[in-house]
Image (cartoon, rainbow, N blue to C red):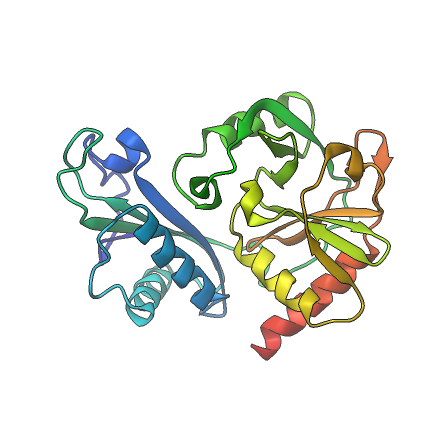
Length: 278
């Protein structure tokens, strides 16, 4: 069951062969976490989507208000009888044209699946990563957007499976580590926490934004938005991944380096408190 341009449908084969998201990757998406009918960090998601649509020169419909899109998302959850869900909101340019579209009008589709847990929990499981160096991420503005052009992430995921890894780290053309396949990265050394700057080409992540704001308001840690080299990782105390679905995912092993998770636990507690108070 999906929400296709405002209509709830049990049909899941609604896209035709002329769909520009399929033909050219001419589409954007937001992955949302909904808990007890509340979309977490909805305002941040909404403004990132609007900013991304403007960058891609999509025509933003007059009715694309925060209230309208929230209603459309919750309408699907009600139809599927879901209170806690992982939601994907995809917006794509309308059919027509080759590389040059015939219109900048947009359409959207919303899908949802049940969440395993309504809470952010910290896993104690082993989690091993390594670099994925077959292809690089460009440092340009487009790399910071959640577009449908994610072939590097797809190939990196296949590489991780073939090499018995839980995830891979992506690098830019300067050979700096910018993110994991499915989230932003944070590195801990003592009381200093580093995350790559957006200008390095990493995703403008929503949970990254939450943690940056938390860290800027605490005296417990010093936040630095600086480039991270692969060599620096092996000298750190902790290393973790963030995304809105899983929260904080501690990395336990990178090559021969083992990591702890003390800071990750502390930050997850602060994040859950922020959500409760929000």
